[in-house]
Length: 214
Ligand code: GAR
Image (cartoon, rainbow, N blue to C red; front, side, top):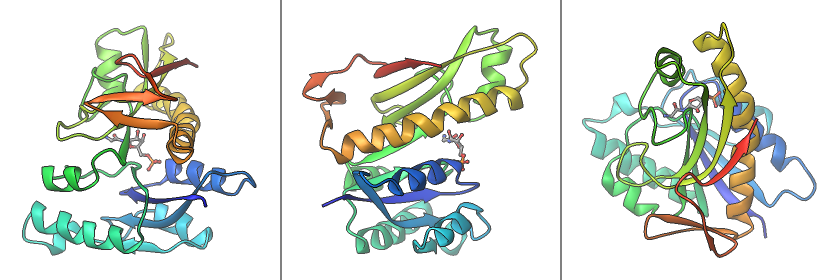
């Protein structure tokens, strides 16, 4: 049976699309059973509808605080009984209670080579620092924001004359490769988080995870 995945989004959902495209392949090891957005206007909800998948809005502004929102989110997610919860451009900070509830089965994609540039404006920060390389990380989520152990990173060279927008575009191309790859590994039961480290096929990965050069 294919592994059921719930995807949380806040925006365009291009990573969601990459996951949906993977599920359209005959041998896909996972399926997306629901897409949940904290924003009704998120374009990714249209992508879910197009794929015939329920697109659900849980608007954070309808709740008195972060804890109440996260509890409502848990209630919604758990109705779909997913094996994995995938954050794909979900721009909300999650409570420790939420993270603990999905311990070892909650993953995120962040547009930097973590632990560098946690938080926002990562492309601009990499350019301002004069870095030669930048990239993207898929990681398990722990209680530390953008701090969980890495599963896979794609390294993207920074080119002469790069702008944040140009760099973001090249990084996103890699996002769309490595996120379906990591979700497939999890679905095939090849991936595990143990004591804040990641095991792939039973082997402990280095702190950076698997590294791929674009
Ligand atoms: C992606 O670039 C992802 O790396 C980033 O949001 C974008 C969502 O794009 N995530 C974060 O910054 C999380 N801290 P998408 O909606 O087109 O998939």
